[in-house]
Length: 111
Image 1 (tube, rainbow, N blue to C red):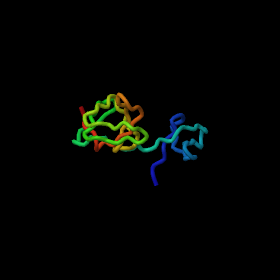
Image 2: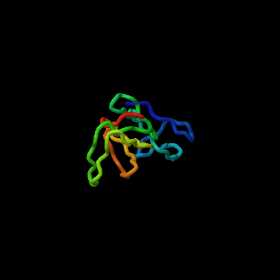
Image 3: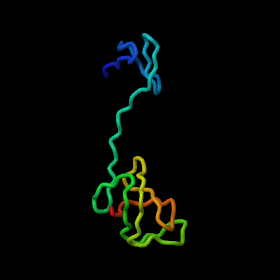
Image 4: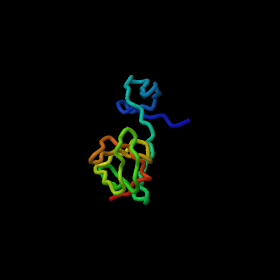
């Protein structure tokens, strides 16, 4: 059993969990229970370089785009990428001709 968490208001250790909240049995104070931090997901391109929010990437091979008759050609630049939360294999971005792309990182390299 883990050590009880002290109440932030009265500092007494007589607390218990109630769903997503912690409750102090002595003073009745309620606060959000802290969840353990998730390990951050590291997103890497096809060469192993770390990608971060806002990077510019280049498509390394011709890709067919679902819902569009225009393919993404090799060498197309995707500027200002957004990382998908909790997913190390996909990024979101826009090309000059196609908006709202979700791309696999294995087909991209950092510019």
